[in-house]
Image (cartoon, rainbow over all chains, first blue to last red; front, side, top):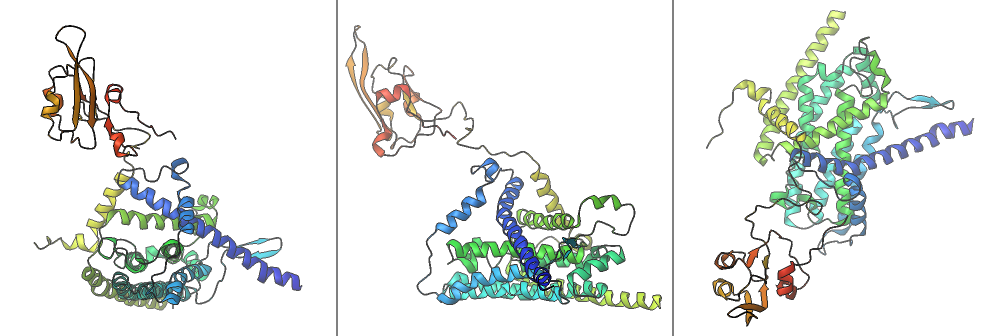
Length: 349
Length: 148
């Protein structure tokens, strides 16, 4: 009995964590490659072509280069925080991945294997909390560098991430009201019961979520904390080598977390389109986790696509969009969603 | 200049942003326009003024190119040839570190002995190697082609 418990609650979670970590780290490494390729195609170029066939070994070469670089720390930097800041970003992004439901789960060798590391009842809240921890990495990294560009970048980052968090949370709340649960698995199950992905029920919320998602991860066109052309590279100007790589990996991991969150909340997680309709039953040949990954990659592509399309916003424009447009719309969305839920419940008796 | 006012429809449904996305999507599937340089070389125009070459069989050592050169990068010495009244260049040096590829020497040459090749990859490891002697000018300098 005890060995069974040990396997169920000790070995299986460790294997799950290892699988998620390895897959995500690979996706992060090749995300950089994919981004360079996609941007190149948008520019009618070819992108990395020299290392290996079609430049496929480029991430490995980049990683080796960064590992071998000298460990530089500015003499005036606050060294403890300087070392901590990149780690916080990685920690926040990777721990948020524990709540992502990749599939329905199966039974293997008599043991239950859920395709989610931790199905906690406050899943979405925890994911939002962990993803907003990354603001600490930005602020502390910029502060501890003791240099002007990182400080400006960090201040911008703090203001931007806090402002967009509000609109993001309001849109998510509207979705949670329909689902009636905060558990990530529960939200997907709710979408199966309703027979529709939530982006059909929440089109406005979905659009706002996507915009805030891009702003939350500091990606173009909202990359003001980084802003290569104005702030050198913002909050991580003073970072180099592996610490810089941590920031880079953290940014991509945050993109993955946000894509997973968007897929769970609005695109029905591991479900096929119209999960209750007989017409799309043939799509079940694609297993659940693959559906999830496909939808996730769609969002990752979208991140890179808009990077290749839009120029960076001016800082006042960014704040105007956040506070004067997105937050009022998201509150109105929340309000009308509440009214409609009340009406539906009243009609149902 | 204030930004042109868009209609409410455009602003609410983010039409401009969608048009932008559609444009970049179209370009994603267009063939690339760049040349993978060390592997393939871009075609140059026939009039391209590349590294100078000298055909020493034609050269009559008239010194016109040396006089025309604004940079003073040409140095040559003439000697009397075997047939009567003929001259040939015994020494011919062109300092490509100084040459500005203006083409005046090529224009002024009465026998078309000095000319610009279409070769442009002339990088060397030392400045002295940029001074080409008659042998190099005749054969063209050795180009190290990228192998892999």
